[in-house]
Image (cartoon, rainbow, N blue to C red; front, side, top):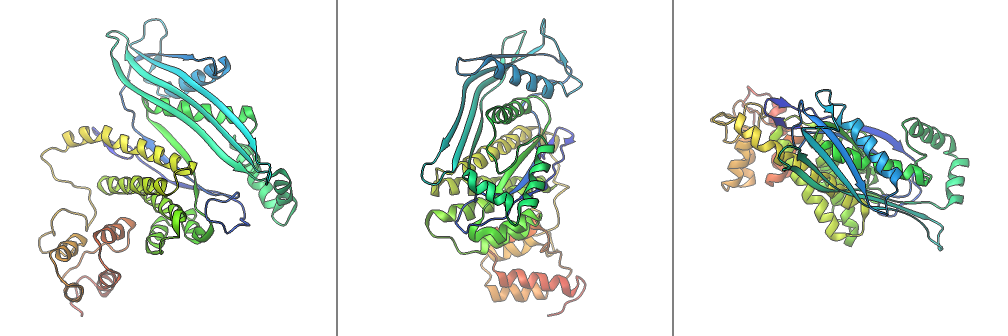
Length: 416
């Protein structure tokens, strides 16, 4: 994903898609007018097919039309053979990618009370890659592409277009259409829904065998969390994370959305970062927050989708951990930023030095006094990863403020 594999560091980027529409509701949740961002990650393949001759084979059950089989195969072939080192060979391949579609389902339900429409769709498949000579399975996984979204009643969608914000919404819808999507306020037609599901499933399959760029549109929580989400939409993920962490927990199951927001901010910071140790920590944090949100509100589809997404990121960590450890065996880390090294850094005052003193039992007043008189401080109190390290260690706002003031005072001075 964004980790070193053997000698290669796969880059990771994050972009924010300004696909937002005005919200007319203060209810806790995502709202009908969702505030979305697009997370972009690069996932390393589970297995290496470099220079292999490959065959892609699809089969399906009765619930999946033959046209879906054809669409999935065409997409998987396009994705897999975008890797120019691979050659398609359906006669005597070295490797065989087998995909069996096990479930195809779409549903359009209208609520009789408020006229909203719930659209659902699922395509499930079992996948495996075989060594065609030994018939040994090299990789196998059950995969699923899921879609679930509730749309406003038709008359409400129409009034939204003809009202004050109609022109802006039309422009947003047009931009989405140019990117191959549908109007974000209109339910997708059955064929459009099938296309979305096929694209997602095919991407998941291809990611197992070739390096893929994966784009995920992610909604941010609205209601009382709208201000924090605006920070994330502007790319200020560290500020969003800090605001949600400092906010008082919401009442009951509503706090699931705050926890989810912390997870999204942590995930976004991981994808935007370059330090692998910090990225691992952030991904683990995101997974923890998504699971906590699911426990509070298990019926929220977006929480399940986030948990599935972060699980694939954690799986990528497992895939790259062994080669990375082997390539670095006997050598210390050389790419960690100041303030995240293992020890207190000798006589150097880093974040870790402060954390170790705090854990050793120094009182807040003693710690602040030591920080104010620290010679040549090298505190990281500006980057998201540095602040996250201090927050997770349990340091108080007063201590962090003292570290920030000491850095402003200048590294060479001993001002109190």
